[in-house]
Image 1 (cartoon, rainbow, N blue to C red):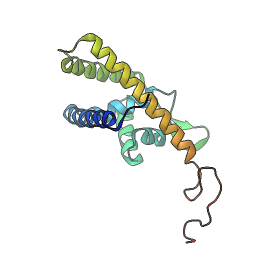
Image 2 (cartoon, rainbow, N blue to C red):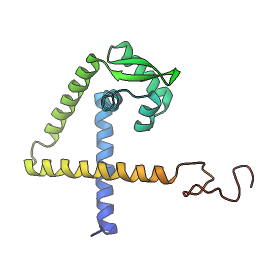
Image 3 (cartoon, rainbow, N blue to C red):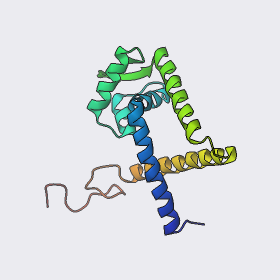
Length: 168
């Protein structure tokens, strides 16, 4: 069974409101981008800064600047990329793992405050559904990325269109 337009509008409205509130909380906390970078780096054995920027939808220069600050703070480590000696890969340092845990606890404490008057079953159900939504979004994005790979002037099936850029 698929949701109707009104169901989707209610969901979208709620998600947008939640996004605004999370943005405000992140600004007040001041740790949002650091936490996000630590989470992305922590989810992989090692990762290129460009992949971190892509995942977080931030500019490479902003992510690189933040990564270098976190290296200086002892939270991240840089390793030369064996496939490209001009590039490097990022890993969590022990202090980064501790900072990630501290920031995650801080976030959990804040959410415990937000949900203090909620029924525990509702909290679990929301968490389950949000994780399901995140998985669906990731899957749809991967599908969209696969179907749009190749040159922008090529169709999704990889065949070239009649005119390439600059040839119109």
